[in-house]
Image (tube, rainbow, N blue to C red; front, side, top):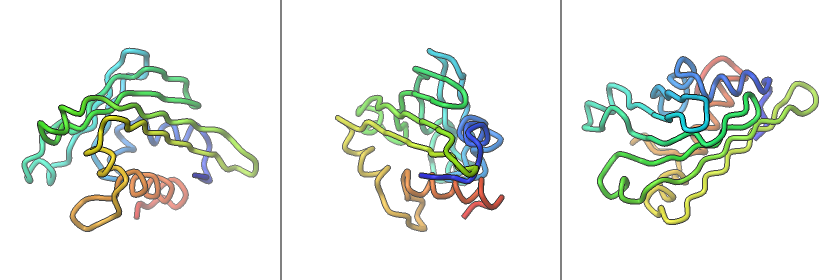
Length: 149
């Protein structure tokens, strides 16, 4: 996806909890930006009121090269079945292109995780689904307009 923002602005938006609470599912994401560091996505108070745990996604940072590349593992903690699928891998690549745009590429390796694969590919619904399409579209809106969808 192309975003009218600098690589640094995109990096901050995907790695800073102050930004992650503004788009997508609006939970704070805490990342230790070093190989071996933790990756934790937290639920919002409304999610917790529905019975979700505080930490809904966990993982480990494999590579952090600001503001170009972030690679981390990713595991849903919503249920025992999701936990049992284990860890997948997410790669974020940010590249500056002409005219003030940046290209953001997100690759989520989902082999062996059919539950997660169906959830992250889902279409938007008022019940709280939308997957990566929802998250990245909302990120783009926020960075380009100052408002989330």
